[in-house]
Length: 192
Image 1 (tube, rainbow, N blue to C red):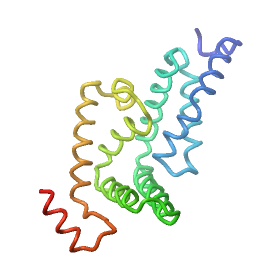
Image 2: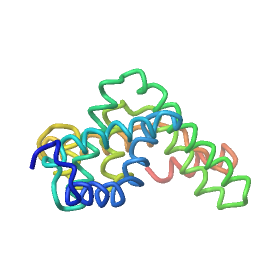
Image 3: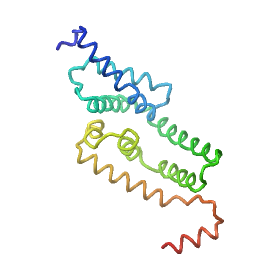
Image 4: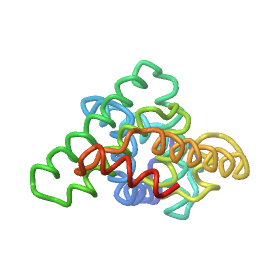
């Protein structure tokens, strides 16, 4: 089909693609840039999708992964957004957890989550991106690999390394507990 062919089948296919993927794509981009820029990036991604509609896979999950790949490359071309994304991700997670503590949730659970936020901050941007694709965006290894422009095997290796790094940093973060310091020290020694 020619790119200039804007007949009903092409328009209908694009409309279905937009309806099926817009919300997921917006969430994907919002986790990576300041919210004031997210809709602009998504608009750019859909402009690429319109121009290259014949290249977009027909299956909804595959089309979503293809769009995530376009978004990833768009964001990578705008490196200035990288630092804002990292700071925003941590700030949002921290503020939600602080709010949860004030709401009377289990202090132990809140402390573990705060430790996880601290560990997340210590991860490299590459590890954060790898974990985000697998956990937050729910992509399979082949889909996430397509987003990053690498093989599925390479993505699985990155994911293993990212998980290992997160565990390492989570273990290295001093435990935030509700117990007195002396009790926490005794308990941690007895667990070794």
